[in-house]
Structure formats: structure tokens, C-alpha cells
Length: 115
Image (cartoon, rainbow, N blue to C red):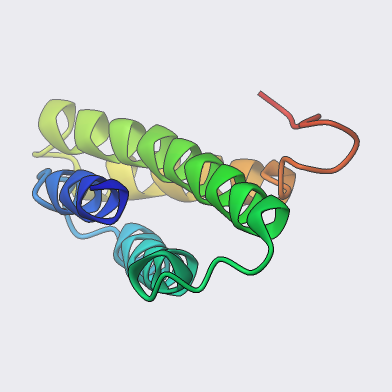
């Protein structure tokens, strides 16, 4: 069920109309790859190290959080500035370039990440 829930959540995010922001397409593609690599041991019942699986699921949840934040902004800009595509792209690009380097993995030193 967990595998299906992650995939359904990603599909819901992917259906959001966010304009033609290439960075979002890349991030959504990365999200699907992360889901696939994280849930593969769960699907195969290959749970040798449960602690590692838990850490991987925490990382996946953090990736979801970051993609959701970016997608909310992209969708909002797309909806509000649909007639000013260059402006919306410039705003999104600035935010993306500011936010992405600060994402981190979220698991270092007990989930200390920039919010």
C-alpha cells in the first residue's frame, strides 16, 4: 500500500498545471526515480536492514516536501501570471536557484534543513 500511495501522490502532483517550467519537469522526473529506487526493496520484500529502509522513506518524504513547495509556487505563478510568461519564469527561476541549493538531504544532524 505504501508503494501505491507514493506513486499516486506523485501522479497527483504531476497532474497539476504548472506551466512550462523545465526545472519542475526535471524535479518530477527525479521524484519518480527516487520513488522507484526507494520502494523497490519493499516490493521485493527484501528488508534486510529495516533501519536503512526507514531512512530511505524519510528521505523520500523530504523529497516530496521539496517538490510540493516548488510545485505550489510554479502552479501559483502559472495561474496568476499566465499572460506574463517571462515575468513568471524569471520569478520562478530566481526562487528555484535560491531554494534548491538549500534543500539538503534533511537527515543530517536530525532533520535540520532550511525551511
